[in-house]
Image 1 (cartoon, rainbow, N blue to C red):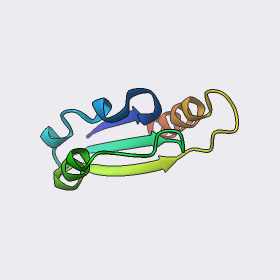
Image 2: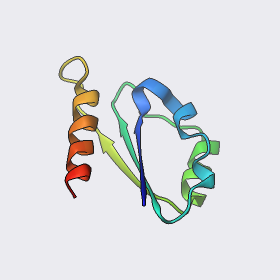
Image 3: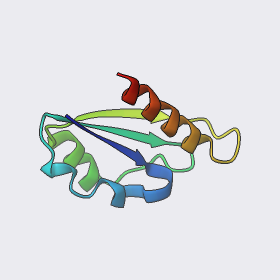
Length: 81
């Protein structure tokens, strides 16, 4: 199993390129904020068609780098498993 962590606020839709090539053994965690919470229809279609599991995490923007802290904390949680 492979895990992919996407900081959507930093990479936008480009961070999801190739998602259509993933299989059911993959999980993609997409972290986003209110500052970056829109996707194109093309990306939406790719997300719906991928065999990978997709999980979304909306992160509050209370302080600078809050998304980075949430992403790295969840990474630690996954590694523990």
